[in-house]
Image 1 (cartoon, one colour):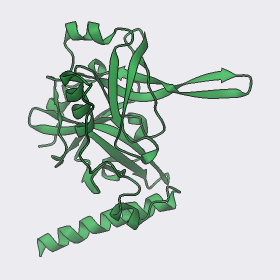
Image 2 (cartoon, rainbow, N blue to C red):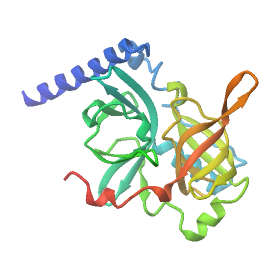
Image 3 (cartoon, helix red, strand yellow):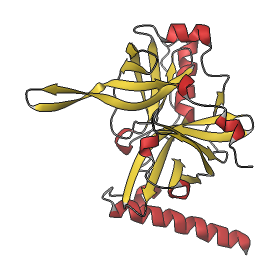
Image 4 (cartoon, rainbow, N blue to C red):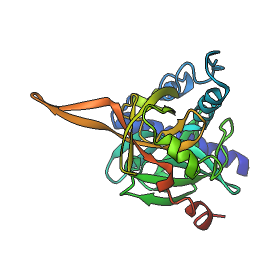
Length: 262
């Protein structure tokens, strides 16, 4: 009986989130989840081939990027707002987390879900939210079919960071721009703003925020927070190809040990 109640509860939660998204103008219906037309792109469940021209290291980096990417949805019942954004599935010690952007969070932990392969995964605990550096660490249960990035092993060491901060150093990220995905993009380091931001020449759209960025050696170097904005004679111009990334060394990873829910 308890198993039946849990199943009915899960179905009810999924249906509720679907209805809310529709109400907020995101045009999601229950059938969208069934036929994968909204949150999961047609290629998401297929085996992805890698170019024979890529080096072994780059193939590994692409695979890491793609296999760790997740989508998130956060709803505020109070403010009647919702957002969808991207994140990276991470393992620290024996616990699992998603690193994403703070500005994507509209509601509480209970109102935030991680999505992959038509399945919703609960936020177990909001481990840490840093509005200044625009990141959130969310504790989750293990997600099948996703491969977590190992922290701190897959963050660059001091010597490797010197290579990351090199002009035209190649990078890769996977996310859910415009709620389509997972889609994988390449880019190059175009410049830096001290140690605060990395500018990459790539492409991002609404929904890409929170995507984990890897260099061509497979190191997890940061997360996407925004695209740049310029001005012209006609007003404001969004520069979708100039993507702002905050380096992963800014994240307080110790929280994944000290703040976990057991």
